[in-house]
Every structure is written in C-alpha cells, then in structure tokens.
Length: 340
Image (cartoon, rainbow, N blue to C red):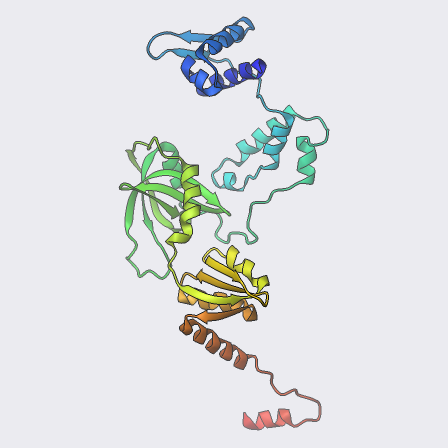
C-alpha cells in the first residue's frame, strides 16, 4: 500500500541520511518514477525533504528534522520487549541506555490489551543465560577489545589457549578486530590475523592493548553470517576419536546434544537399542563420557576403549564394594581395632 511505502521512505531517509532515487526504488521494489511521485507527495504533506543535484546527489530529510513515526506495530514492540536481555549489554557498558530505550518503547504502546508489551512481559520470559553463573564475571580484556572494535584500531594481545601451556609459550598477536559475539555469557572476539579470520575467546586474551594503527574493514564481511557458519562447521574442527557403541534409546539424546560428540550414523536394533557410530573427540573424553552414561552404553569398538571402560568400572566397584555391617554386640569393631 502507498501509505506504508511513504512511511518507509521517511524512515529510510531518517536512518541513512541520503539516498538516491535508484537506491530508494531498489529498496522499495518499485520504479524510479514511482519513487519520484512518492517524494513529491511527501513534500506536499509537509515533510521537509531536500533534493541534492549532481553526481553524488540524492534525497534527504532537512538537517535536524526527526520524525516521531516508528512504523512499529504494537505486536512488533511487544516482541522486541519480550526478547530483551540486558546481560551482554551490561558487560559492554550499555545497560542504562538500553533500559532507557526500553522505557521509551513501552510508552509508545501502553494500552493494556491482550498481547501488548506489558501483557506479554508479565506472562512470558526468555532467559538466555546458562544454569551456572560465571565465576570470573566480565573478562578483563573485554573493554579493550570493545574499544578496538568500535574505533577500528588494531589490537595487540597474548592468547593463552590452555592452562597447561608452559610458561612463555603463548605468542603475541596483532589482529584487525572485526567484531564481538557472545554465546551463553561467553564473549568471543572475531578478528583478522594476516589474511585469515579467526575466533578468540576473550577470557583467554591477556595483555590486550589497543594500538593507534587503524585498518580497512572488509566490505564483504558480515559478522552474523560468519558466526553462523562457525557454529555449523565447529564439529569439523574437533579432534576425531571414532567409536562404535550400542546405546539405549534414553541415552541417544545425550549423544546428539553433547557439543564434543559428532554422531555419524545410527541404526535401530531389534531389541529397541541403537547401534551408533560417533566421533568422541579424544580417548580421554570418550572414557569420561561413556562412564557417565553407565549401563545405557556399551563400547563395541575400539577394543582399547572397551578395556579402559571395563578397568575403570572395576576400580569403581572396588571403591564402593560394601563393607561388613557393624551391629551392636558384634566383634567387628574389635577386630578392626586389633588389625589397626
């Protein structure tokens, strides 16, 4: 409808400062002639639209003019408020502006009707945090990484991959910081090192220093696309320890939901169990994971894993083997004292 299109033109010019007729036509999926007629109609209705001629010309709103229109429906405002989570924004120092923005958004559609922002926020909650709170709080290097990302300046730091690394082994790096991402309250820095784009866990970044040197941000890079692709390909980066197992139906979900397990093939057996071929990352992880599922999993191959599980189960059995029950009047206690 034309009314919706006119509103979108105002919002586009308000957010992008200046756009050409061709750019507006592509955004609205109409012809340049239609855009010209719409701009004329907006001008006649009192919207202060300014035309710029020449090679870099286009259309913009008069400097200082801000429309009170949001183009947002009550349901859209309610959905944004329902999705609200200020935890990561607090880490970045944006909690107070964020809360003010939410308050302004609530005042736009305050009517107490079903599905309003207030109605939904009282009845639905989306909690994106994990079950366990972070013991260390906000990573120490996060403010420096944030500064480097926002100011488009190179970042120097030392990256410690694990606590087991010998002293002096971490190598200093200089990167072009492209963005920050947070998942389950864990912050990651996405950066370009030489020509490769890599992901660094911020909690493992030490001695971070924002340099004076700036860099050209890659025009084709999209942080959201990169992150989704990283999540998709993450299992391929894990070490591989292939195993064949017989898994009870109730334990199969544990294989599918475990981050460091990649299920390659499942086959339903006649007795209701499953034959599973999976990558279990490393031999040590495989041992702990299989033991954690108890009798719901039996290792078929490799033989070495089956033998290690059996040996560990034997040690556990000896550790918990029942002791003689002491009863009043028995001489069990006396025997123990004599043996001592």
